[in-house]
Image (cartoon, rainbow, N blue to C red; front, side, top):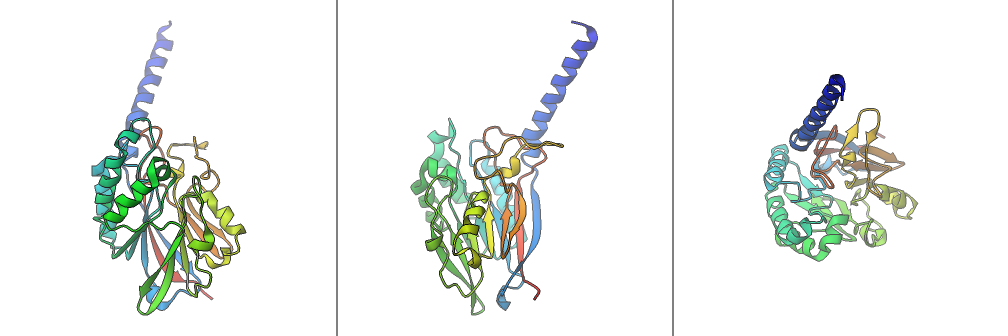
Length: 284
């Protein structure tokens, strides 16, 4: 082997090792707080300026360490949101993590319970279901985090309301918008659904005109994004609406990049995300 070729291989190997170290230690723990104003039609006056913090895809604890989730919670608390929403995948269905899933679910629920927002709610993700939906639901609810599974609840403020809805995981079970979305809400509706591409199903449903905002996760934003190429791998039902903001006539969709990782403990050009949404009335 020539000296130049040997140097090239050594240099390439060193660069790859450095990139892996950065992605695993820096990129995976570099928190991005995304602030966005969301204009809602007919938003009741008491909800003008109402703030909603969204986190998603925690995946404790095959790769997501408890101390990192504690950092996330601390940063959410510093934002002082009115409502905290968690859009699924609290645990991971992996080769090794399945054996520790019960402890992971309860540890995750314990840390999440330290969120200071006056209200917090969750929906299920595909990993939660494939590990054990009853386990994850029991862990969260026993620590004060209600899980909405084809359900809706009213958020009351100043004598007015908006509706919070959550469907069962669209990728693994049976979401039912007829149950999740009230048939005559008379107020804005926020829908939690783990998989963002489920938005296409919502659009085709008779209750689509009733949904003002859908919040999703699942895609991890691609997790590893290369310049000019974008995401290397995207999960089923997270391939079309990968991250950020989308609009479907009246309904708006926001896709959070998530906190944790699956497959490999790396994030590149795709940092973990805390989203802070501020609700404002749409201009007439």
